[in-house]
Length: 402
Image (cartoon, rainbow, N blue to C red; front, side):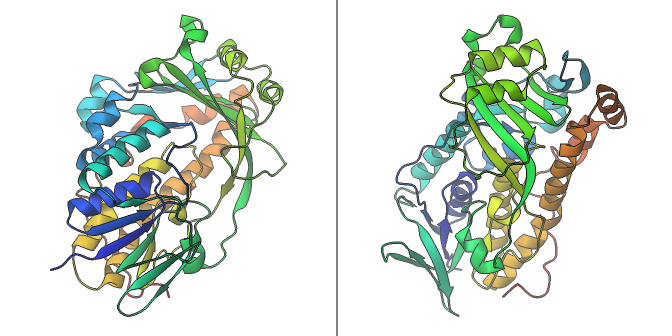
């Protein structure tokens, strides 16, 4: 059977991963990215074992691991004094259980490793400065239109173009986002600027009234990644490149631990970014006859389980498996949605629920909430143990969305 030509819109983590997975199976792929050059805004990514399995299948794991840090624990800590409310050991027992480590990596490094792999197996597959405006499909093909009049013709199109997806809008219509009430700060600091006692080799989730912070090492511990999630009634754009005054960051975490203060105090005051976090409830109908959504365009999630990138990577492998099964394209696309809907919806909903748990108003309520949960056991059982490369396939629903 001759493999189809797949047009992928969006060269983020999910789009590049899908291109690799499809090319490995003999499909023809072209990836179109609206940016004139690759180079992602700095941010950290947590790479749990379910994502590591995908990266191994794509042939990118070794490069990713070499660029990563390997935290020893995943800890939930109390905002004022760092009291450890719960921890997930990430050492030898974790590695033995899952077969892969828990890594933390700069997003740009992860993206570069995937792009290097795609370039090695499919030179010329990536096209930059190509902003999609829509698509039309017929019984024989799909045509994707771009600004400037360029078109790309293939057998199907995949919308991997993120939370503001052009492809999603055409498949699902307008599905407005709801502002969560949270703003996300993002800063990175040189670890050498911090006292040694404040250079974590762990993933630390600091929880407190109306806000929480996530801190972990990158690039073997050379950089400390800080993300601060703060409740704020004002709405701002979902842009990762929106800078805000350092003084606002300092004020937002006033009264928090010495470790938090140390990181904020050495942050580059001209490189403090804050953006609004919006939520879209899980919705079915990711596909039409020759188009399908992947990653954030299908199931954008809050970052409160650190699984957004992992879900996109899993999607890539599962979609490649579904397409490789053969048969009618629409049936295969709908089978992919059936394979992924429940799992991605669970991640979206549990991430949203964590927002409430992490932001409880008193230290005592926070202690009680964590005493009632075993987060490590829960995630080990269903989240980290998942293997997209050979997970059982779900039965497709009878009719794809128009």
